[in-house]
Every structure is written in structure tokens, then in C-alpha cells.
Length: 481
Image (cartoon, rainbow, N blue to C red):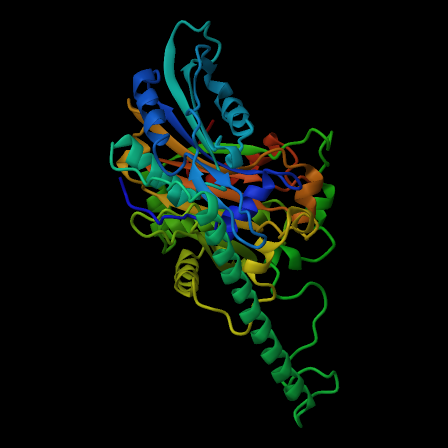
């Protein structure tokens, strides 16, 4: 077993994702889908579930007893959930089955953090006699694992490697003292932030009062701005008016029951690499450009640059953290997208990746420690951060322990993040956007897209038409699920 700290406390992202399960916003859930060429292997999946239950995914929350202290992770103490279906799924029903699995509620606070399910697949119109494949789903609360943590846990379980074991937290007086120390450390971080903000404010006042101050009262060189502050994500800084294409799109028929459409498509890996190379890029930069062009196709940012968020894993070996992902950001001009200039995208993405982790000048607008110290009643009233206009998470070619985890012949692997039960109103308030993951296994690259944009992409048919049209623009044959 891999050694971990004696106390494993929730990081800021863990805490924010956990609160989404407790009301006020839709819970975030990650899903992995393995599509098999034959029926699922029940014994293999039982072994996989048992070993996942020994590792880092299988955790629950122990609440801090001192105000201001962070909650702690502890072993779940629950049985793994494995649902082996006896009823087969038709090939044209795989997408609906996968979505139904993604909608099953999870409760990471109480140790129900993940779920493994499987079903055989039969040909469309078959009476169920001939099994032509299988489908396996693993869903996991984002609070307990980001993409990198999920891959690590699956690889360890599938290969029988030593798991990362969540430590049993202290109890009694030791727990109380540890909570008090953590609360003091959190308060000290907030105090340092307050001092830095005060120093920054004093510098700004001196600059404004200097001989180079402008008539606006701003520091020299500053430009007056309107609208949301620049610190907000790009999705919050878009014009209030919708483009004509979006205004013409029909709204969801029943906003109360609407759910974000999802699509998985299989693409030939070799053809993807060739299409990328023809435009001076790699499969990764092709994926980024594909998604940004898809944003334009929805009618958003017509003739304007498209901001794209690029998740970057920062996990170290044997890292016990649930969430360690940072976000690189790249904004791609419209002419670059029109020309499909992947060389430009590649250079811009390289700069964005290099900038990840570099501290921005000045004090943060609000310290994360302060937000994490606030009670749910206060945090639930804070404005939700806008959804990225496009989030492109490329898993590339994951380890075989991940792609081959369910056993048998794996045809394709799909990965995607879902917001369970997100309503049209919630996603409109967040700014809408597209979320996409790309996973390559052997000859197949699987592109998975969730459209969190109820006005521009109101249904699955619209999303399917947009994705297939963009694939055709790259001369890529696409097989949707």
C-alpha cells in the first residue's frame, strides 16, 4: 500500500465539488465508458470493483469540529456498488444507457462516491439472442477524483498494484487539536491575503494621486472598462445580446425536464493524426481547434476569438489528492479557426501550458481559504463561476491498465464530465458552453461532447448534426453512439 499523510483534508476544489452534492447546484460526475467487442466479463468486473473499493476513490467525509477547519477524507466503510445487468442494450441505445448511468445520484460525503455497471449489447432490432458487444460504465463524483486521479485509481485496481489508501483520521481530542491547528492555518492565510490587499490598495492610491494620474482617476496607463471585471472567465465577458443564429434556435420544449445533450463519436486515429499533420498540428491541437470551431458553429462568438480552457494534470506519483488539475487558457482568433491553422494553435497552447501555475501579480480577489471557511448558507448565495465557452480535455493514449480495465477486447473508451440534473436556467446563468473529452485506444479516437448551452444546442439532434458536420469538414468518418 502507498503511504499517505496521517490526515488528508479536502482541498478547495474537493470542497466546492462536494457542496454541489448538497444542494444549490448540479453535482459534477466523471464517467468512463468502455465499449467491448464481446460480452462483459463478470468475474473481471467483480475483481475490478473489489480493488477499486480498496483505493483512493473509496472515501467519505469526516466533518471538522472546529469552525474554519477543513473537513477530512476517510475510508468509505461501504460496500462497492457493482450493477451487472442481465438485460442487454441495443446498439442504438448505448448512448441513452450511458446517460442513464451518468444520472444515477452519488453521495461522496457518505462514501457512495463511485459506481460500476455493465450490460451486453445486441444488434439493433435483434430479439436479444445474439450478443455483439458490451458496454461498461464507471461513474465517480468529481469531489473524490479528477481525471488524473480516476485514471490512476483504475490502473492500480486493474493491474493489482498497491492502491493509494485514504488514511483513517484522528479521533477524540487529537482530532479536535488537529482541527484547531488547521483552522488557525486557514485564518493565517486569510490574514496574509488581507495584508497584501491593503498594501496593493495603498500603492494604487499613491499612483492615482501622482502626476501621471488621468482625469478618470485611474492609475497611469489604465483603461476605463465596463461590464464584468477582467478576472472573470471569458464566458462572463461575452456581449449580452445573442448572435442571430442563437436567437433563431428553438428553446427547449420543456425547460423543467430538459437535460444537456451528450454525444460520443468514434473516429479513426490514423486519419485524425493525418488531418492534424496536414494543418501543421498534432492530434491534441486538432482537438482544441475542432471544439473551438464547434463553438462558432453553434452561433456563439461569430467572427470573434474563442476562449478555450485546457485542463492540465499536476499529480505527482502516489499523490493522494482528489483534485489537482489546473487550467491553461488559450484564445483562438476567428481567422485562425477559419483557416484551421493548427500551427498557430500549437504555439499558443504551448505558451498556455507553460504559464500554468505561475502566480498572477497582486493579491487574489478573494482567497480560496476564505471561501472554504464559509458555511454552505453563504457559499450557496455566491454567484456560480461561468462555464467555460469550451473546455477541451485530451486524455491522449492512457495506460493499458486504464483502457483494458474491464478485460476482453476493448473497441473504444469514452470519458466525459456531467452535471447531474443541470437545468436550462442553471446553465444559462453560468454562461453555457461545450465540454469535450478525447481518448485514443489503438485505432480508435473517441470524441465525447456535452452541450451545456440550452439555447444554441437545445437537443441531441442539433448536437449530432454539428459534430458530424465538423468531422466532415476534416474529412473524418465518424461513428456516433
